[in-house]
Image 1 (tube, rainbow, N blue to C red):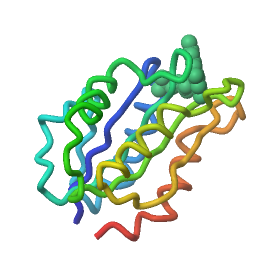
Image 2 (cartoon, helix red, strand yellow):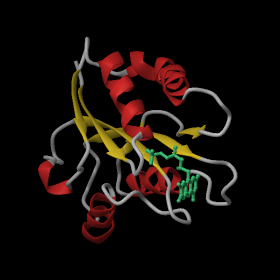
Image 3 (cartoon, rainbow, N blue to C red):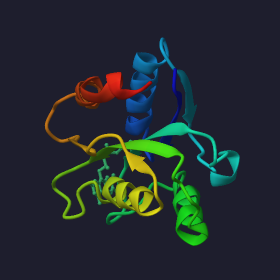
Image 4 (cartoon, helix red, strand yellow):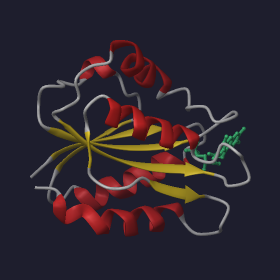
Length: 148
Ligand SMILES: Cc1cc2nc3c(=O)[nH]c(=O)nc-3n(C[C@H](O)[C@H](O)[C@H](O)COP(=O)(O)O)c2cc1C
């Protein structure tokens, strides 16, 4: 059993639906916490844990407001994240030059701070007509068995 937190960045709710779907898939086997208001100081960074970041991109490549304080705290405090394993599921729209920029940025930031990437970022284009939860599920199924 892994201790998993799903940290959400959302403006309109789509990423929250994806996060809830991932939580439902994970929760039979793991301890899962869905975090709509991620705050860095609520995490005990020395404990082994897994973070799944589920975030959209807004503005012109910006983070949603609810996850911005978390990203700013990481950027300013530069904590050691070597106990953290993580994966990023990013929602965006390919019509923007800044497609999934928030997800891509946090993926790089976490790696820079020493966290271990469990799998490649999942870039979901919400404009394809595909259901984002389906894409997220296919992505999760590729690596879910790596979680101990
Ligand atoms: C005002 C606005 C700005 C957006 N800017 C971007 C962007 O820069 N890059 C991107 O990939 N998607 C962008 N999007 C698309 C959203 O990321 C997409 O609609 C996503 O599904 C929203 O997820 P959420 O409901 O979790 O916020 C934008 C959407 C809106 C409404």
